[in-house]
Amino acid sequence: MKRKMFIMTVIMMAAMVGTPLFAAGAQEAAPPEERIVLWTTEEQPERMDVQRAIAADFTAKTGIEVDVVAVTESLLGERTTAAFAAGDLPDVIFHPLAYNYTWADAGILDTGATTEIVEDLDPDTFRSGVLNLVEFAGDYAGVPLSGWGQLVVYRADLFEEEGLDPPTSYENLRKAIEVFHDPPDFYGIVAATDPSEEYMMQVFEHVALANGVDIVDDEGNVTLNTPRMRETLEFYKYLVEHSPPGDLYWQQSRELYHDDRAAVIIWSPFILHGLAGLRDGVPVTGFGPDPTTDELASLTGFSTTFAGPSNPEGAGWAEVGYMGITVDADTEAAMEFLRYTMEEAYMETLGMAAMGKHPVRSGTPEEPTKYIDGWASMEVGDDRWMPLNEIYPPDVIEDILAGLERGTRWGYEKGYGYVTSRLYETRIIAEVLREYLDGDLTVEEAMEIMQEETEKLL
Image (tube, rainbow, N blue to C red; front, side):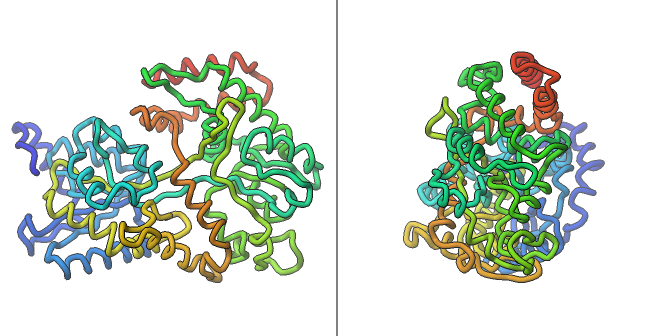
């Protein structure tokens, strides 16, 4: 459907703003109803090649041209807002989780169209977690395309030797740390402590979600000065006290784990091929003279659920990418393209970057595990390549994928995901957390500041 024309001042904005936005892909060969524009943040050359190939195949089958336009993710919000004001949005936008609610609330997304697609594809074929994150006023603001759940990565062999349960809870992790911690030779955990790195916020949010901490309650009241947050902060400080000193982020945690000097880390699935020795840039250094050994992968366990004392059911942390149809779209053509992407071209889409593009659909009603099975057989690597299902057994792969079922994020299911995005941008939570870890703030002072600063962002 098309929006009604804006008044003359907005049309003038379109002349100034709209033209450069689409110049990269615009052609005049086909009439508007036979051409759609896709904005994508997957702008790496090899990924653009895949997307253009998918678009070309779609055109061959349907006659609908697709202009694939790369947009840098950091500029996506600004460019979308400008195009909306000009009445010149693209038909389809691939975007991160953070934009779903904001754009739906602003009227940028046609939530009815994407809801129809999800229902046509059958919601039961999607991981429920990815749909929960995108609910908006009874609709789905976008169609989940791919994602990943953050992992608690641990040395399963050492846990088994010591008779320890997997680190799926505060209690289990604390017990394991007490057994394994032997600095400087070996650390029970490598926590994140560098507030300048987004990784610190990701890890802390994961640990907080595990204990049932969210930034708001059902009425939209900020809920960071609570007993649950106190438990979270005190436990996180315990983790830091049993980590190496210094400013720690993803690099040190991976290096120490690869070097056989850490029992547990929290990491994204992008670590999976490195554990198997497939990347020369991140060698496996602690398991003999061969840095390409796959031994560490065989010794590693993963958990996508982590639980605190106030939330025994636990939670995970997920990152998901979505496809949205805009209110300026040729709706029927855009819907046909999204259906094609989620069915015929779905494996090609995931194959752009299999490590970080996990299937949000398990399969189809007729073939319930079609996409899981296809993804598991994909080759991953960097300098060497192996199929995932030759590195990890089926139960491990299924647990990794379950992160998209269990995963959530602060505020999103209550319509306040935009606040979480601002907390990441401002780094206020991470910086206050670091002051607490350094002893410059008491736990009460840290919670009070987190509460006050988050309230300012509503």
